[in-house]
Length: 324
Image (tube, rainbow, N blue to C red; front, side):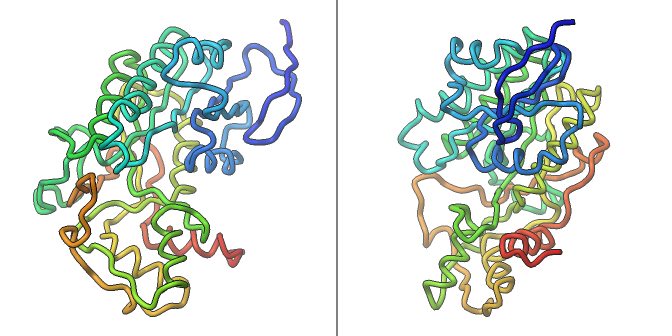
């Protein structure tokens, strides 16, 4: 058996490894983004027998077949591709339809064609925004299930992500789609909602936050751990060709999350004022209800993600170095 020696980034660190052709590789596509970075940071959760190869937008253009073929040229049947790449500017997508479609729909289709041809396993990350969110919470008290009819997404972002899901499963019926929602890291410098609320707590006496959008806040680290567990379990019948939902348990409005952030940093939650979506119009309409049920994740034998409030506490404590 021949052995290849080449420089590679193993979950973010440049090393030289001796890798046999049968050594499974986990390709993290979109490695420079929020989730891709978290996956690398949580690589201790990865199986011991795999090599982790991060691919940023500088390494691969997922919508270009030549670029994908070059970046995944040695893809084999034991390998896994985790696609975290996405056009996530929800408002920007409304005026950049072609850009959003290229990354969210065309790119995943190209990736899926390559994984199908190689016999590799593709895990494609998607979003709660595939649902328009117009149904009242009473119709789905436990949240949307994967087999609920999505209807027509309310945003270009949601529509292109839904198109990407369908393209992936059409091109590679063995692929797995994992939908998640309201992802944050919690660091004070992060550009996500939690990070923004932490900065606003320092800058303003009060903040007004919408209290009529209900969803599933998800700590990026918990999601990364869940994806590594999925990778380790392999493309079993329960997950191959399936759509799964992976979010922290429970539900909250953006107001709930903001108030909880203020509490976690020792500020008065009364400084967070509830308001309505109508008072804060955005180019892209947000779903009023996009809670995702975790039943499919548990049914696949995977560990349910903890409650969102406990996860938020951990995210802020970890960013401040106050957890043991």
